[in-house]
Length: 172
Figure 1 (tube, rainbow, N blue to C red):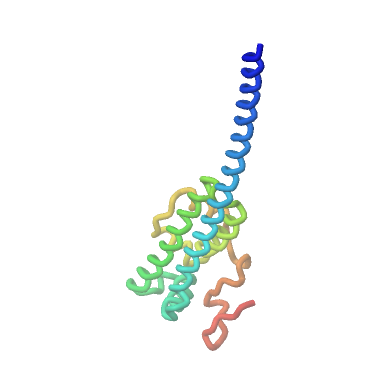
Figure 2: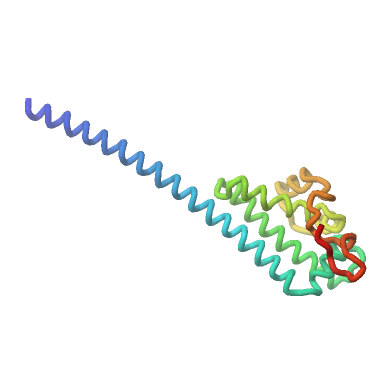
């Protein structure tokens, strides 16, 4: 009889251990998901900051962007290539972010914060023209098309139309 009691107690202890282990694993999976989402958000910020740093550190590139986002057909071949390569860098960054988002490692709020300015950029008159020359996967093309016309949505985005008579862009 003593062995039966010991057996029952051992089974109860084993069952409790399994429940405690499952709870521990659930907590760890949740922590890991949060850590992964935080790392993806950091990658998002670092990537866009790196791209923007190139833009703000080169006044000639800013002028190129202003002209190219208005009408890239007016650019010479070298300038158009520079614009295309810089825009492709943005596209490549958003390809990676989209993969993080689709995998669940980038929170929806972070994706929304990132994809809308990206789509606004490629919905400018010049962005629409240049997008045809860039390597953009179908899911990002669908996002860009679904976003539609960005005019007025992102008034902070400088364009030649928002430059004052000194050539400096105005913030509204």
